[in-house]
Image (tube, rainbow, N blue to C red; front, side):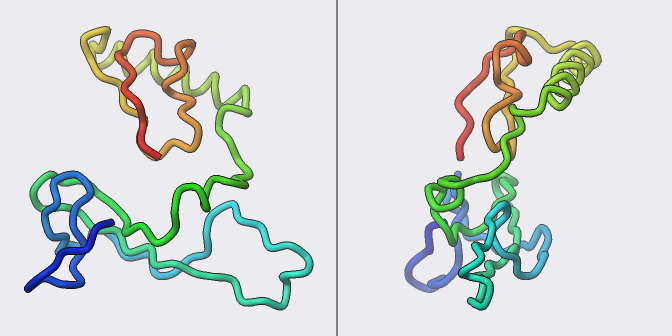
Length: 137
C-alpha cells in the first residue's frame, strides 16, 4: 500500500483512490501468513508475524490491509485452493444460482469475486450469467 509524503508522512493511502487511510475497520492483532507451513528444520526459528490491522477508506469505502508481503511470496507455495473441492464447487454453484434469482441478476451485471484464492466463482461453469471481470490478487 502506498505511503503518502509531506504532512501525512507515514499514513497509508487507499489502493483505489489514494485517500489517506484514517479509519480502522477491524484490528485483529498480529498473525503469521496463512497456509505457510514451518519445515522441520525451522521449528526452533522465529516465525514472522504481520499486522492484521484492516482499514477502510472514507471516500470509496474500500476495505484493505497494508501490503507487508508480496503476492508472489504469499502464493508461491500456497497449500489450499478452493477449486479442488468438488463439494465446495457444488455449494458455490448452487449459491450463485440462488442469489442470481433472488436479486434478479443476469448478463448485464458484473460478477466480482472478493478474497478469492483461485477465482473459482468466476469459472464459466459456476458464474454463467455474468460479465466476469478479472480479480486482483
